[in-house]
Image (cartoon, rainbow over all chains, first blue to last red; front, side):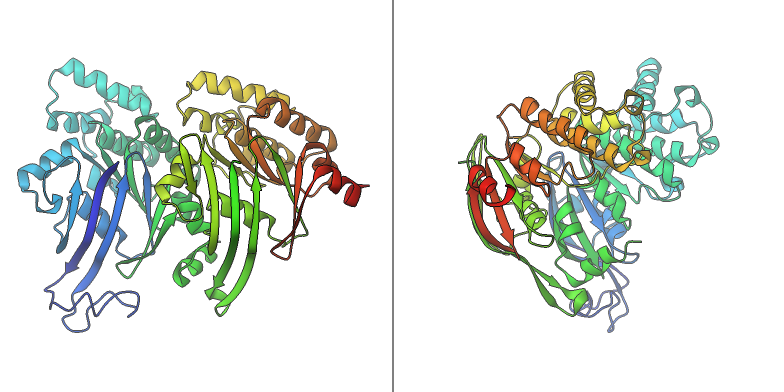
Length: 273
Length: 243
């Protein structure tokens, strides 16, 4: 079953002149329109996301992958395109303010690259998660508390730290709180934007492993955006390769890694140190 | 018949090498019966690993068909959709490369158990089966809860081997799974293949060692410079090559 189907997703920063998409992209080697100087963050992006799968989006800085993640998380407005999602009638990108909130609270869990975008560091770790539960209509102190405890255990955070300010947590724990918050309301879709940024290598591995276990157990469809091929290799079933705002290649992750077709993908894979 | 490989070719267009084309496989055809053990042999660079990777779709064949009969029907592994490939990997189709490639900081026991619980088997039951397999492969018990990154080549290969056979896929692709094992451990691994898989799993395995081929194979596929040289039964191969 398809959870989400995106077609012609486009995000342009600036005042588009109408020809920006033709004047940018991998063939031109730039994502800034030479006519009006608008920046085409992503354009003409088509893909499907299946039930229970992890889709990787890989590309270097400026390839448009984070812009794409923001569109899907309904954190920014698309310039054009259509997203059909199980949880919503009609084009998801046209959802009004109220529907967006409803979707973000119940159906889409976002793990931001920067902790500050995802968590209130002055609140306790438990409080951050409780806030998400409250937004989805949870009531009753005892119920919320026991759900938070359950989520701490699932994401392997010491429950004894539940009431401490999030600012006092290690980077790895903060990332876990973000993941706990993202999955708190059993969403249909989780989006991870650069899930290992700022973490020590040893912590990265444990966070990825924890996430993969939860993802498989709950069978939640996931989009993981990263410049790091190792993150993609370890998590994603299928992968989209982006450059200059376009998808230049897509396929099974092991196929992309071992039999890359596009010239750019071959260079990317061969650049790994 | 479980697998029918028909005129499969694989070319690599190496953009990084000025667009040079490399031939991985050239017009290879043969078929495999259910329950058979087929050994693939040939010199380095003859296309053995490419063949297994094409069957697993880690390489996308340039042309040809790879018809795979599954429990629910059949599909062409060379051309079917990615979703279909993902759905047969695991219980129907298993693949093990020569070296272990896993998330770091996962204990050996969980590396082996993971494919089982991803198939829905209870966590403790999966760990139980993993223990049995690692024990049969003579992996010291004090390593079961340690991280394979710190293991020797032979120890890592045993973990890799146990992980590959654990889910008992219907078709198992093994790429030199015993290359780093000493003779005694290798004998354990091959014994395990026979007993644990119990003839229910069809195996296509790449092997360098003649004695291994002699012990496990029903038929032998010989590759030479990306082409199929011949397919012979083990008795013929024995008279031709081994003795």
